[in-house]
Image (cartoon, rainbow, N blue to C red; front, side, top):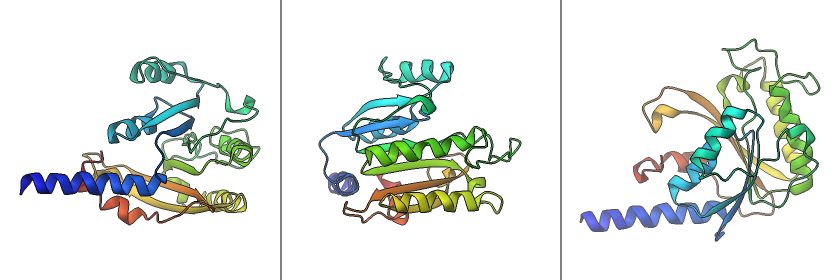
Length: 212
């Protein structure tokens, strides 16, 4: 019974992953605002074959951590404002700085052209427009969906729809998966020509599969 149960878990896990990523043999990933590479680490922990073809990060300490956690592999393009275009990738992650939105900061906002750290989000638009990845993944603080900042988030979602993506977003508390009480907003955007059965409720149901 235990063998049957574990076999079922493994089958469910890889069926879910296969459906989500469209059956790629190796996912080509670009991490903008990479930090220490938490999102590619998640792929690694899940056992999903992937290749990080580029990252964008300017913090030297984050880059040191990235290099150590990724066996010295750190294909860094540097300052996002100076990137002309991106090479092809299947998955683009862009968890932009939260410092101008978070309640822990001054909440200066993310209006385009304002020069705040969080307004770097809008730099992603031209890079997404030119490279058109199949999947986009963003994570940020819950305050992004607050009354003060929701109009900017809605504008961003409209921009993505205009570029040919269907958006799925949800506020998720980390405590549903691990011992940490932290609410974050996640947005998964899938290009319109890609089969799309994504549902955050289905992701929530994967807790018993040890995804984290």
